[in-house]
Image (cartoon, rainbow, N blue to C red; front, top):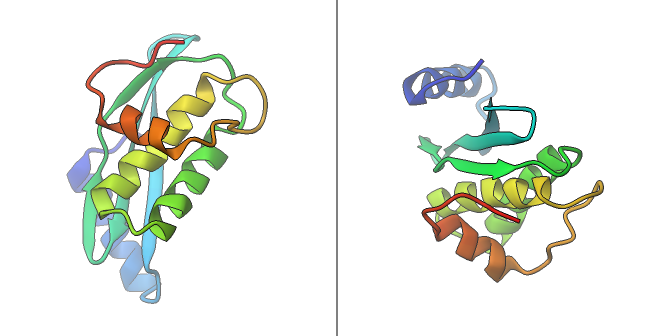
Length: 126
């Protein structure tokens, strides 16, 4: 399912009612344009509010590890105490970059490169 903001907010709120100790819930959503071009965006519930990332479009080299890159990007951004919307955009940018790298791991360890990507207004090209 590819929810809109309102649908995702409702799902997050129901989740928090059932599991009130949760501090953060996040998910990324994939939009498939073709076998080689996808877009990603994400939603996150944090501090009682739902956030929506920007949309990243990219050409896929390797899909393996994209979800791990999203999760690790989110954890990294949380540890660095980014603002919530920056946390989410950093996580999606981390996943988008991983899709353009062959192999299971995101070998990009330059957080500044990822931060620059999350601020760009154009598609990822490699």
